[in-house]
Image 1 (cartoon, rainbow, N blue to C red):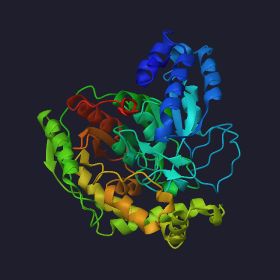
Image 2 (image 1 turned 120 degrees about the horizontal axis):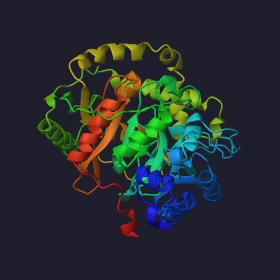
Image 3 (image 1 turned 120 degrees about the vertical axis):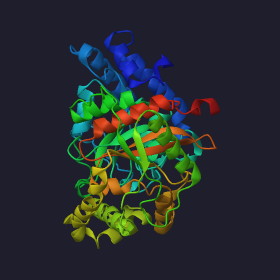
Image 4 (image 1 turned 180 degrees about the horizontal axis):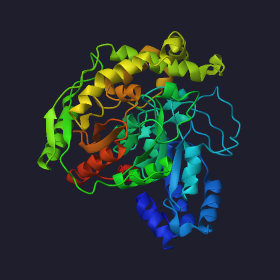
Length: 450
């Protein structure tokens, strides 16, 4: 019964459509793995065991089973998106514990495609920080449980990396898909605007936040993205040479990029060059003010989300973040700073099809009660290890994280791919090429270390 846990979504869906396995058998096997492993990982806030099995039976009885792209595939949903009949806590004791009346549109699309929601995954409070912990637990990295899974889609990433589900839904407002994916050895894509429905919190962090998939393979990523976007992302039929820029410098002044992460980019650049692409070193003209611009938008987004909540029930780091952001909300709403950044960076892409950078600057922090620590300590830790993601939320352009090897510790190491709006299919093609040229273990060996 548990043999389907650890398989890809594409494999599972094909087997269910062919009636080689039932959705109940698939879901039950994944629930058994969750029960066995999640006590050490902390991926889930809520596991919907009985409801998921009942919904698996409903999928099996559907007349359109043979055409469902995600037939019987167990999925996890980040706990800042409504799931019908479940509370949406957003990592906070300040949010209401009342069931949602309707699914978020992305959840509804997954269910329409035959997926079964097995649970809601842990996030940091209001999805603010790049580590995942709070009143509902600590999400740990399945490759090394002493380390964080990252944030804010940390629970979703941990669930996929541990083989608890083959796919998870998350979102990304300052790197919240790409950071945990890079930590946990997954592939993910933050799409550009209007590709996947957003509707995250109170205004999508001024349009910077996008929903997206987390997966172990590019095939699964493409499959889930197509369902979420209600569109097809066709494979590149001919791999004509692309102009790929390689950048190693941190976009945020003062952030140091450690050698294993620059080496990972050089390795990826080398295999792409040998594959026929035109690869050259070129640094985007990031403004010195980028770090300040990112901080203003990051805090202002939190201020808006916290407006309707009782501040006394928020963690101190969240209260400080929101209080700072209230000073910037009016200016951020104009979008002027983002327009200036787009105008500055767009000419760079006239000479390059894809930008290749490190996904992270250094190894992820130790797992622990970061929600009990001071605001500045959190900000410094997050900014030091994850400075590469914010520019592409500010511009709104699509960006991916793709694993390309391991650190000396054996933990995953990843690169980031960035393109202009509308290049999601192009980025998926480059990620697919990297996955072929640098094969990667699909799931963490967490089960071997009990």
